[in-house]
Image (cartoon, rainbow, N blue to C red; front, side, top):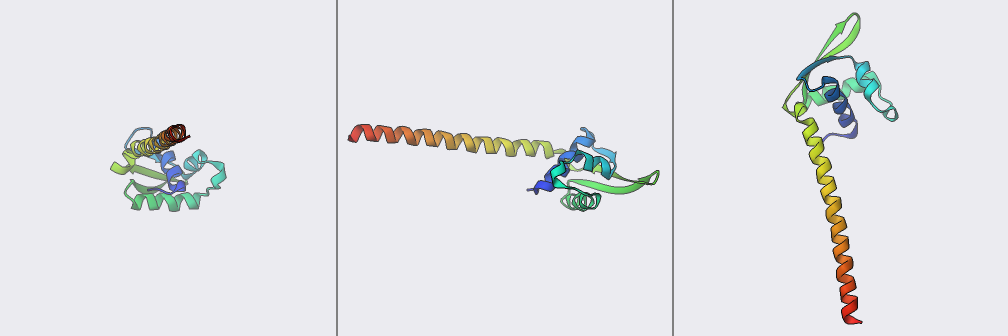
Length: 119
């Protein structure tokens, strides 16, 4: 399970790759896609990218183009399946909420039924 910051950065990397297995991005492109409230810096993004690489989401190769730091990112199986796993987590949460609401409705109905029987 990814932390909130790792999740935001992985979402940005996935969108920047645009369905391809590899892409060339700058750290500034990644930072520009992240929420402002996180107050991300290039160093912080670099550290999180390396931790995602260690978790086998992608290969990260740092290079320079015209004096600007660039990353060559090649998605692995975990990186390619990121969107699918994110959707599964959302479905799981929705299912749990619906199950809770249904449980509350049934509990209320049984309570009303018992009050009606014993009063």
